Amino acid sequence: MIIIHLFYVLLIFRTIFGDNRLIEVAQSPDYQWNGVALTKTNRIFAAFPRATGAVTLSVAEILSKNILKPYPGGDWNTFNPTTSYDNPDKRFVNINAILTDTQNNLWVVDSGMVGNKTYVNGSKLIKINLTTNKVERIYSTSSLNAPPGFALNGVRIGSQYAFLTESGLGSVVIIDLESGQVRRVLDQHPSTKFAYPTVVRMDGRVILDTNDESMNETQLGEKVSTSWKTMPTGGTTMDDQGFIYLIDLERQAIWQQSILDGSWKLIVRDERIVWGDASDVSQDGYLYVPMSQNNNIPSFNNGTNQVIKPFKMYKIKINSA
Image 1: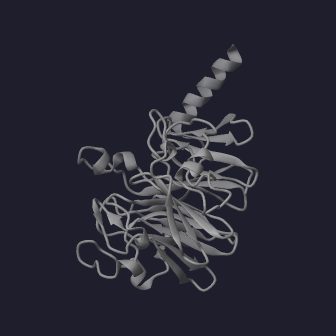
Image 2: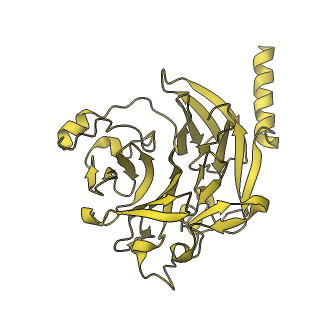
Image 3: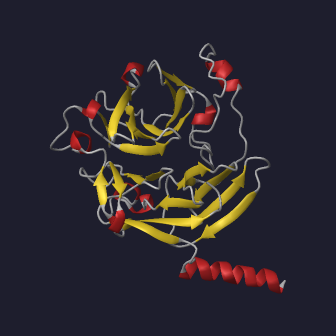
């Protein structure tokens, strides 16, 4: 009993006064960020949505001394819904996610939507070659003729397909990376809808592993299964050992979940974890988490801005890659 009590005392102490395992790695003085992506060579990229104002970086590389360099630069980072909104097909409109792959590419998910306004040809997936630092290909979703409210959210890349979650209306978007063909599926299936008291557990979870384009909606729905229920999360990622890391919004915590049996392990609980968003795992075994403070922005606070600047990013050792 004494050991148990000491455990909870330690947990409360770390929650209130901060856990020294949680290390600050970067700050964004002005712009909200909602995602981080890391490369094998330790380059760090961050995604910046357009939720707190018309001006933002959209995508930036985090350099030494906290310098945020717009990436890839040029016209891509110059879109402004108030003063400069031409050519949304070749500029970042509103970034919801970024991801690096094993081929040294950066993938950028652009919802093409600011507030309730959708920009024609703005919804897209962008592939950037990190060797040349140039946009290599743009995958537009305009061929879907999606209804109002359609908003791309997260992405996972397979050998031939990109799988994107669409959180505006609820669906999964599949893009053939060779032909560019786009398909929207499961838009009527309960797995892509909000289910009280939890939301869909995994961003980009593997529910279409067979890649069978001949399957209809009913057949696809039969392939979907619920693995485990979770708490509401700000973001998820997976390491090379098959563990899933979830950002617990309510408890200001980070959990590790086994995909084998669904068991949970508390990694850290800390008051500095304020709506941790899309995270990533570094080659040297750290989990990087940007704090988006979504709960403090006006749209979540009846119009009141309670954001505390600067926005911060932390890392914590997890001994995975």
